[in-house]
Image (cartoon, rainbow, N blue to C red; front, side, top):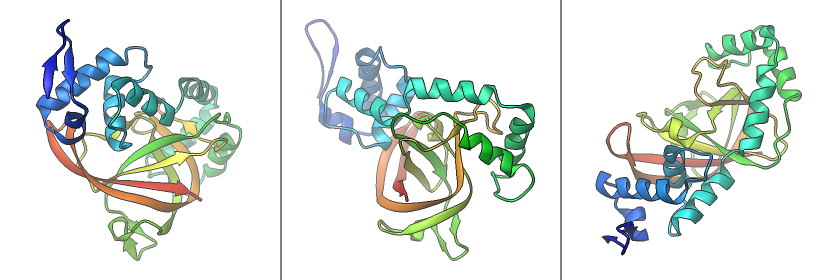
Length: 239
């Protein structure tokens, strides 16, 4: 139920957070995030969509926000990664921009410089989740993403570009939200300042092998589309 405490502060029953995916209830959920998580370095949008995509629920607002922060890249790693990319040579950043225009194909001139930049990038001090809004793309020219099920594996031969911000993959019509963890020590480039989309992009090595661990269909209120949407949340491990 929705109510007010003695100071006029909104009280939101946890069951409403979980089940009532309409604007009225989600407006109050976001208000509670804003009030309860003021010290977070993440935006209200990232905390909101992080809770939804990562299935963090049935707990206090403060604990939900802390759980999202633990699963998203740390501010220290993000800042260090951006600083490293800002010092790359113009030749390397040009190569990255060129491959951004061609969906980071593994083929073509300039890929060796990107691999070298990845090899010398800062080491992550802990794992974190990245997000990608994907269409029903083909896998190995045989099956499609929607044909896969938990336990299946597939290889992506291109440079895999994702976002560290859960809010970035909202507001788009598509098949699925694809999520996987950048393992502790795994090398990435935070290329948002030089990438084609210039939107919180994280680039890692080509040829990643993924193991599908879960596929969940969920209804989420999307503030960009201004309506509740059905999304398939696909989680994978990097092998």
